[in-house]
Image (cartoon, rainbow, N blue to C red):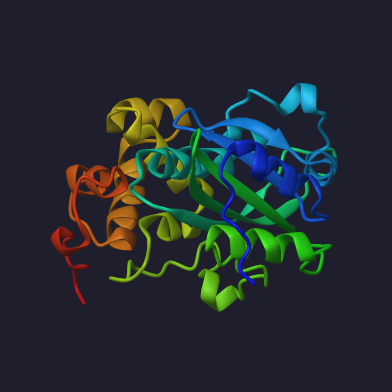
Length: 241
């Protein structure tokens, strides 16, 4: 028998509150945390008071926060409907987890559900997760992605036609993700070099590697790709292939 689709955010909150998997409910388009179940609060080393109302990207560290901010913006805009990535969490233990985030429309708004699978201590699927999957038509993909499927950070692979640009972003070295974040903020090469305490030529070298990874030839194409202003059919084919 099919479970009825959750009609409101309250229905979703009731479901995730019973799960033994860490879940965060994110309000869109603001991308602020609306709720986190007890398991998630323990994983993040936070309390409801310190988490509710924060931008969801602030639950991650460093370059992972940059990635989460970009991906959540695309999710809020409807440019993507989901993303999965390995993230460093803001917690006392500095834990890492696979984070599965899915966009969901309910009667009283649009939300995103973030489900964490701790890298060191993954919990098995539970009945609530299966119930939530049935009721939202979402395949949560609880099994942890293999390194080959996930790409692995710093693999240097170029963009594939069926691959999300955010998966490519996840593979970039930390410094290159910082440069991408700076570009999205409107910074130019000289300003980026000054903020990172490197030379402009070093930034340009990183940009060349970034362009190759995404299969673009300019900053304009890169920004358009990340902001989803171009359809997949418009993307420039990766050079030298």
